[in-house]
Image (cartoon, rainbow, N blue to C red; front, side, top):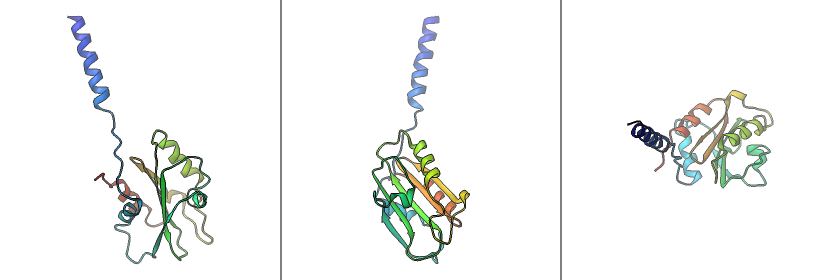
Length: 155
């Protein structure tokens, strides 16, 4: 009888371990379309934005002096304005160290990169969902953009 009880406990443990694992749900679609969804609820009088591909040449400006690699990244910033606002979406190939990547971004990004304006530290937000990381720096709308990102669903 004890052997049967042990087997039942082992089988239940196996089901519990494998049945409760989190499945990473990646957000599908191109970064430009995803970026547009992040601005839902941001007032329409917000300055016109430009979307810029983040490359080796400009990644330090948008993300800081980072050491990790990524599949693609897209930034959104005002075309001409003295508003401290930056949103960057980063798609990773490998999510195994996503938490350390988020910490690295938060530590290395410059919220004072603009000439006459800056973003307060509490308004620099780094979040992740699936294989996407969001960096948002904005003193007024950071929470709206972050909430829109966290509400994204896989199609």
